[in-house]
Image (cartoon, rainbow, N blue to C red; front, top):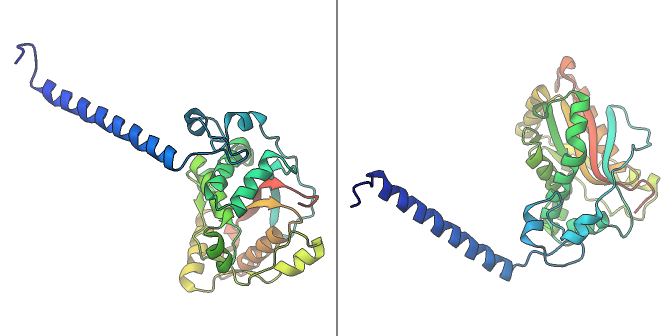
Amino acid sequence: MNPNQTPMQPKRMMLTFITRMRTIGSTITEGARQWIFPQTCVMCGRLRTEAASMGGTHGLLCPLCESKGFDLAGPLDRVLPQGLQSVQAGFPFVRDGPLQEMLHALKYQIRPDVGEQLGRMLAIHRMASWLEDCNFEASQCLLIPVPIHWRRRIGRGYNQSEAIARGIQTVLPELEILPRGVFIRRRATRTQTKFSEEKRARNIRGAIAVSQRARLSQRLNILAANRPMWILVDDVFTSGATLFECSSVLQRWVNRTENVAQDRVPTMHAWVVANAEDGM
């Protein structure tokens, strides 16, 4: 043994060796994953570089598509139902634009990761500063994803609004997401893409509810006492029929004196990724 070598050096050398082997193993594993499951841009289908997937705000886009950027949405001009204080949108919906491609992948190509990415974008570009302006801490807020019917969840494999909420939470981890099953869609509804505004409202009326299971409704009661800011989360705002029905159902639940103490009535807002008021 080298006389200058301390007893700790062999252990340190072993740890260094193990660290290097783990790094090599991770590199090999990542290379194999990229070969078997190539990471492609959700917009154009090009392969994304490691730098594009690891860095930047969008992550799921190649450098070319990421460079196109996204405009920020202006205020929504709508008369809101009682109890809903505001509806905020992250970005304007533009036909054939990058955002439309991402939303299409989220809803029709089994890409919940796209929803999480959109949630991160929404939180980074809009929600973080909005919370500061509202003087609300993230720890006071409850994210409430707009529910989908269980048959549609089985068909798609996930709720796109929940995926967006998870993405928001990765940026603002003190936000809490309402557990699945508390707020439900008890009746399947027809797709509303080609419906008029009036028909959309009729289609969704009565389809949303707070669970009547005591354990689940009690969970919402507890959250109402500790999370005074409720934020409905959805993907796209068109007529507002679904969001407005959700907020009305929650407001009626809150107004029942046995559910929430009158001095703890939550403030309700809504956030969507895209504003498509003129229809999709």
